[in-house]
Length: 460
Image 1 (tube, rainbow, N blue to C red):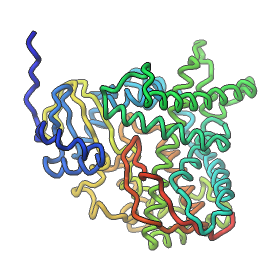
Image 2: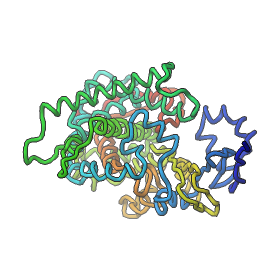
Image 3: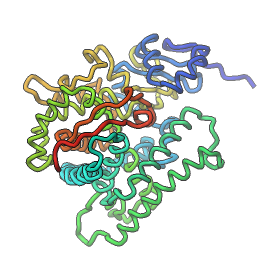
C-alpha cells in the first residue's frame, strides 16, 4: 500500500533536522524556542510535521481570525485539550463546539454582574486568612506561588461552589499541580501509555484526579444536606449545575463533576499564576509598587476593597493588565482547522493544527513599545483611566478571545485587582536569590516556586 505523501509546506519553517536538534531546547525552554522560531521565520511558521500540518501563529490579526472573526472554522479537538480532559473530562474548557454551547449557557449566570459583586466578600475572607498565616512570618521568606495558589483556590471554592476549601487547600493545590504537570508531559509525548496502564506517571495522575474527585463528592454531599428550597434562586454555580430543567432533564453526576473540576482547576490556576508574577514584578520594580500603594492604601484603610471601589483603582487594574501581558495564563492556545483558510497570506488546509501563542502576540513590536518592559502605565489613558480599547484589542489575549473567551475572565480580573488592592498596602516583598525561571506548563509558573522575603506593614 502506498504511503500518503505530505502536502508541500505553505509557510517557512525549520527543517526536520533542526527540529530534532532542538528537542532538548523545546523541553527545557519552550518559550525561548517559540521566540526563536518567530524571529527566524516570521509571524506564521510551519513545523515539519506532516500529519497534521502544524503552524505557529503570532501575527495579531491572524490570531484574531483564528479565535474571533472566523472562529467557527476552528475546533478544540487538539492534543492540548484532549490531554487536559484526562483531568477535567469534557467540561467547558475542553469540550468541542457542539458540546460546549449548551454548557456555556448553563454556567453563564454564575458570572453575571450581581454574582461578581459578591466576589469581594470571598476575596477579603481569603486575604484575612492569608495575613493570619503570615503573622509569624514577618521578616522571613515565603513562597508567593504557593500562597497565591491557596488563596485563589479558597476564593473559587467559596464564590462558585459555596464550599470552604481552606482546610484542604494544601492537598487540592498539590493535586492540581501534579495533575497539570503530567498533562503537559503527556501532551509533549503523545506516544505515552494510556491511563489504563499502571505506569508511575499514570499512577500519580490517578491519585491527583482522585483527590479532586473526593473534593467534588464532599461538595455534593454538603449540597444534598443543604438543598435549595422551593422558589429559592440558585446561590452559586453548583446550584445551577444541579438544577432540574423545565423539560425534566438534569446533568448526570459525571457531567456535574466535569464542570466543578474544570472550574476548580482552571478557575484558580490562572488567577494564582497572574498574582504570583505580579508580586515578582512589584518586588523588582519598587517605583511601581509605590504608586500602587498610594492608590490602594486609602481604600484598604477604609473598608476594603470591595466591588464598588474598582473605579478608584485604575492603576491597580493597569498593573494586572501589564502582568497578564507579560505572563498570559493561556500562553498557548491550539485549534484544529475545520475548513481551508488563509492566515496572513498563508494557506492553511482543513485538519491543520494551529498554535496561537499569546506570549508572542503580547510581545509583537507592531503593537507594543518596549514589549519586554514592565510598564503598567501603557494601559492608562491621558486622564489616568484604564484603556479599555487596548485590553479589547487584537493584540491582547491573556484569556483567549472570541466565542471561546474564558467565561471566568471578569471574575479573574476582579479577583486579581481586589487581591492586589488588599495586600499591596499591607506588605512589602523583596527578592532573594536569582530571578525565577518562567516554566510554561498549563499556565506559566516560576520553576521551584517564588521565594520572596516578607515584611508586614499594616494590620488587617
